[in-house]
Length: 341
Ligand code: F6P
Image (cartoon, rainbow, N blue to C red):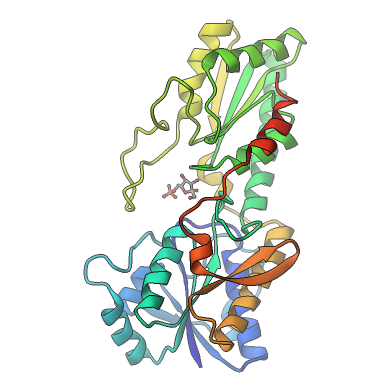
């Protein structure tokens, strides 16, 4: 069988390990042949592919990004749609697709499966906010990068007796902020799931300062204070019509400084969190997911995605991952909040 693989949406560390796991098991165990669609659904809609022989995946599990390229193309936009895609697949002799992507990718994959295409999904989001899987690859790496950066902010903050704010990714869910914040011993962790007033934030900052500490605040990009209507966004919309986030730390810094009188600096980590080599945990998870995805293709489990449940890899329907986001539950926030201030 000839199988096409695509990576779609924002990139994240571990994508190449999924590709390698799929291709190696597919060739060694099942005797299949692989091609990669270039730049996510764009390559599918335009029939733009590259061969993926065994040597093309050599050593790539430790490589960041994706060797296939990615985009936020919606396969139903413009000249896309199931009929166009079917024509390309027939011409190229591709019998099945493995789609590696987040909620938008999996939603599109579901619609295409309903229209008769043979697709298996692999969940991907650095934010770790997909339902139906305990963890997504890339998240562990992002937490490591953020924690390392925040540790560095702490030493310069302590030298200058400043309050330091670190802004991390997390559009709708504060998992990266929560984990990196706990790991780095933050005095406040601000996440999209919990609205907090400026008064509360400054009281945590003051408490830490009174104990002679350099206050450290970790904020997710999607956080809103109780005075805000929506997340901070001044860079327009992305191709999915979602506001481009980023900059809440810069907004909070002067407010905290004005309220507390403590000199405050903001740092936004941005795409550094998604770049570079994946952690060992992410390489292993991504490899296992990739191998399970090719098994799902062999078993004809169309319309399903692979997922992590505890330490086991399972198969779930696309629907299980769509609709509801996996946000930080109240008890996880309450547990972290004991350490604030
Ligand atoms: O969805 C993952 C994510 O990293 C979000 O945390 C962030 O808001 C967004 O992608 C950034 O997307 P882009 O790469 O298009 O700037």
